[in-house]
Image 1 (cartoon, rainbow, N blue to C red):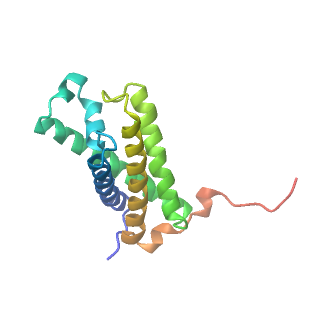
Image 2 (image 1 turned 90 degrees about the horizontal axis):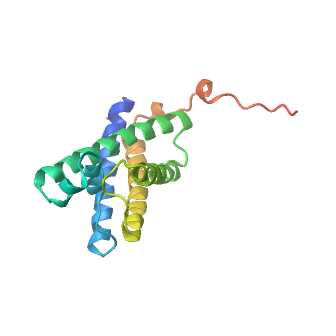
Image 3 (image 1 turned 180 degrees about the horizontal axis):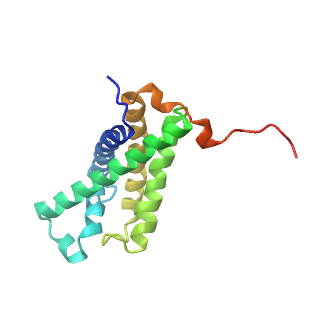
Length: 167
């Protein structure tokens, strides 16, 4: 049975993609490529630097909840994007969306003070870049695999109609 509701499909697929992102980040951290995971950065949205120094379970829980909420929200956006543009090249579209999230959420917003975990080391940035790419790939794969085929027919009235007339 395929999921027909875009919000539910995006939420489920975004959380699946987020789990894959965290697995990739964990592997990279275990291999000496950075120290920060998505939940560490996400916790910094709501907790100040002093609170972040304490590795309390509830602090980590804030990060996990926030990170998965962001992943679910981005999954919904990806679902709508694929609904309106079609599912052709969905992996490439997912990779692009994952890296767009990395630039906007981990780059611009943290630089503007959106997280108390800024600045990040070069290794943390590479870890985040790779893991966000994994997020986009896995999220879009889940969307296409779990979603009803009828969701992915581009709507010409929304996208516009191409013209063949010259100037």
